[in-house]
Image (cartoon, rainbow, N blue to C red; front, side, top):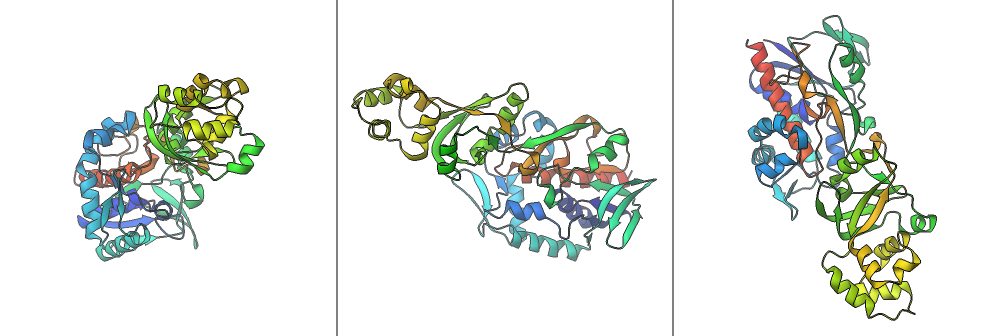
Length: 400
């Protein structure tokens, strides 16, 4: 029986292990951390967003330049199949109002426990606290609680993640080892990350942690409705993550980038001008905003933060800022804080079986490949799908 080593016990690695043992292979998963699926569990703390219910074309568009390569494998394991897989593990799912798909239990832990029971029943061996430490001749060197050991296998699959949340295991230590073997790797950058804003101290002290609800945020990418959170450093939340790639790329060529906010999507510019013009010019800014535009709290504070006194006393200019407020971001947050990362093994280095062209018998899957997507279930679906695709590639390689 051929032996397959899977290095990395996240969603991509575990999905590959499930597929390979179902086909009769002897599979061992090597995981650096004390337990597998740590980032998977963290993602489920606030309700595991497992996939998305939108149509296939729109779903694939979320992967940008990588959609062409990811398209076939995601179509082979689409959202409906992800839900059926979870259902078979005893996890009922539902579609939320945004189209995102969640377990009814809104937790990752029951799903992971059931998954691990299935894997154990299929004969998958999971060795934790086994940290890959690079190549050793034709083998793979591991640091273990009992010292170093070298593992050889008929095929090896790397599912080591990117560089976000390194304390959970994805520390990108693999980058130099693969580069030394001639594998092209795009530098890892934060994706789905927050951004710094140079708040005034009074604004930061009062509003850090406060959500900004019912807005539309726009970059070159598109206009997206939603909400975000003011942080001590700047801004974060799902609406920000949806624009993160655009803002990040602009900041690489500039000292700042504007996120355009519509603070009152339900009201036209003309109506705002009309209602603001009716207000007593001697009234306070807060009163004029509240009575003329229905704006108070953090939205009023944002307008005060990024307007001049002349703006605040001119109904036309104030209405313009309400509908198009430039929120200047000055830095991206560190990759260690990001939900996911961009960059990794370039697609040109990988064949259609997810095998590294320069290292026959060595396969890759998951976030360590050069793709990114917003939050919303896309990340997990692509990790599952590439894990299954790499497993199929391993089978073809071993049957050659």
